[in-house]
Image 1 (tube, one colour):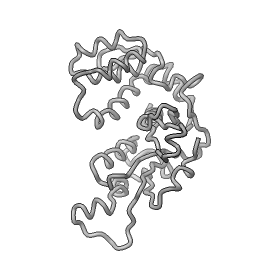
Image 2 (cartoon, rainbow, N blue to C red):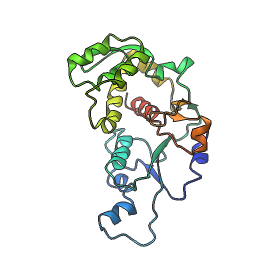
Image 3 (tube, rainbow, N blue to C red):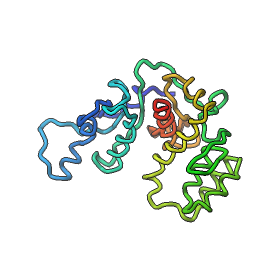
Image 4 (cartoon, rainbow, N blue to C red):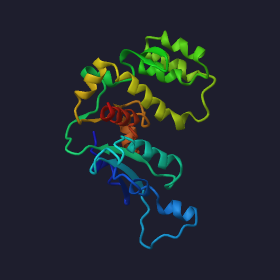
Amino acid sequence: MRTTEEAIKQFKHICWYPSAGKDFRPLLFISNWYYKKNNVPIDDGQEFPDLFILTDHCGLFDSHGDTSCLGDAYYQLKEGFCEPNAQLVDIEYKNSSKVIDSFRGENYFLSNFYHCDFEYEGLTYHTAEAAFQAQKCSSVEEKIKYTEVKNPVAAKRMGRKEPNLPENWNDISYDIMKKILKAKFTVPEMKEKLHATGNAKLVEENKHHDNIWGKCYCESCLNKHILGLNRLGNILMEVRESL
């Protein structure tokens, strides 16, 4: 597994994202590209950030005590406050040397495929995967079928065939996943397991080219210098801090 330092060597200008709170936090994401696009005067010498990295060097909590840093970061990227090729790729936890990069074995509970009955928006699901795929449905009646699915692979396949997938699914899926995992880890046993990971960095490492919810470390993705967003790992760390 590459370290963050190794992964970012290819980038010249990097915008670190400390959770400083107040007005400084969002301003870190407003780049030259945004200013020029909107004809806003900028100071000479400002750099174009090529890469955005979320860091905990200033503390994870914002000025209101909320773990909203990731949400703010994704909002800035989604709303076009930075140049189109910008990426948010990693979280670094202060004083944390431990990394959990496999959601298998003793850490399988971190996987969305792990069997854990929990309630989300009035319905009880057997896995987080089933709950997530159900949100692609347009009505409660359609979602009910996912409450009966115990096999997470089957739930995922069903979700791929949903005809009424929201047009803005890519925009809303992060927040949906976060709400689902908050519900999952509200279950006392699951909450205890997540807390037991301490301040370890959680990375959903895989070799099936998923660089959205995880980080793929197959030879092909490494050779292409693809940096995974690790959304699942990031959300789990957010949830851990909020419980």
